[in-house]
Image (tube, rainbow, N blue to C red; front, top):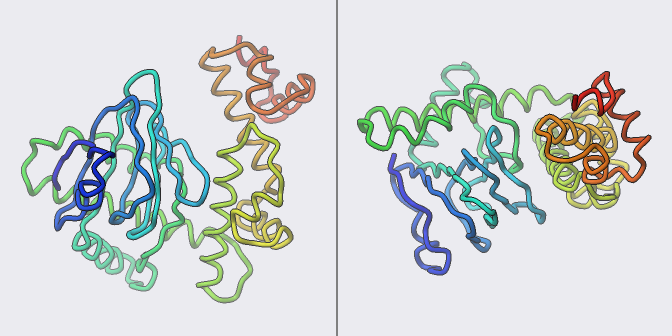
Length: 288
């Protein structure tokens, strides 16, 4: 595992060759403004330790913040950007092919079901980091001067955690497609549609737009989404809005009326009723 700074986005040759190496590379750096046009890289996991970095994998940008991570597949095109008033602390891990192969083999042995660990494709959308994954990522910068053995072990631990998480989520999705490959593809598409909704939670997005991003018809998307997540796309969007509102109220970032508007509510009474159903208290009581 090697540690490097962010490459110069203006140097296309550096961007093209910088990340392809026989060793796993950790890019840990700070920036206020930087943008990388669409490019390819090895299997990688992205997060931040402070601030937000935006990634576009499927045709829309998602903010990745502390406590979240995004996995991008080898050879999957994406772009990213940082634009902030204060430095964003970015952390990206680009895994070597050998580390990936070793982690998959170890996971198959641990499960005694090799085919379950044969994870070669991730959905490519952000997710909340489980405690183990969050700790592994957050403590990476402290390993810059660590012995080689410890750094190499941490790379495999990260990969094993990613694979285990993905295998678990694939089995948790109760989709009714008969073939395993079809179920996994439907789940991937539903996750992309959900990510689109969450990235545009404050906007008046349509079922047509979300289904299109997922590459499904509206009816197929609606049915599969409910099977996969236990809620409809509209319910998922409302949850995302209210969770964001709660975070803003908890952080005292704006007035209640400003929060309601910022998360997509034009009617304050409707916002207050929805908030109370979700959290059991009114927005005013929550913010008190």
